[in-house]
Image 1 (cartoon, helix red, strand yellow):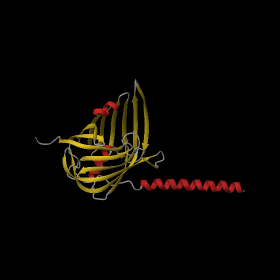
Image 2 (cartoon, one colour):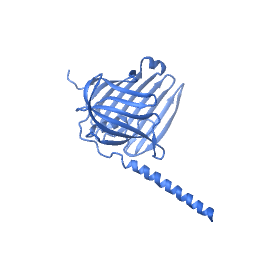
Image 3 (cartoon, rainbow, N blue to C red):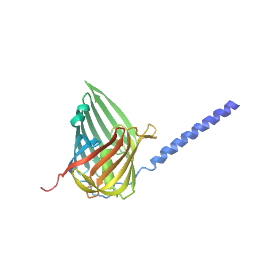
Image 4 (cartoon, one colour):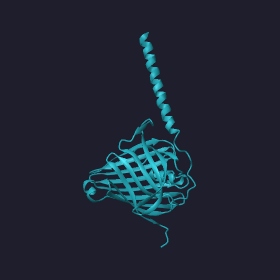
Length: 272
């Protein structure tokens, strides 16, 4: 009789814990931003270069080309590579291409290729309104098998579409936006807070800027939130003008503070 009572108590505790975890998951999902794209003007076609590094040392360079190849699509193409003594220690060449819908600012597909000294990783993401399908291949001496993974969550963003969506919003001081982003291999809950406005100088010039705080939580198999093991938080500056360009980002990660900074900028339709 006592054993039966203990078993019933144990089952009740398990059910209570399960319901608590379910409520917690539902709680964070209810905080995801559901506003449609804002009325801010769309980004003009442009070419930009960025430097990346840590502790004031440039470790990599990147070139970005943003276009509108058709009336219903935005496209972002980027190439990057490690440089200098960093390249001797860690050789990396990267190519990135992403497409997004003009009307919804939702992602269509993303292709990313990372070439290291001894291997090459190719990642292809295909998005629908219900989630994403990821195909990932690792080549070493010969091409390896393609690993397929699907992640179900409505209205996901990739990095490209998340930036387009955020820049479309009002971005008033203290506004908070929560987006579920799938950049390459996993999904994250990104919490973006508008801290305020300030002046900032980068290699490309001096700008009035919008300052953001970014925090990331990884989504586990059961959509439970997990701490990001390598990323702590980031501060991001975007130009406070008609373009809302990424000027600088500083991220606190496991090796210290890394940065990305705008070096040069040219609009494709600029008059000569």
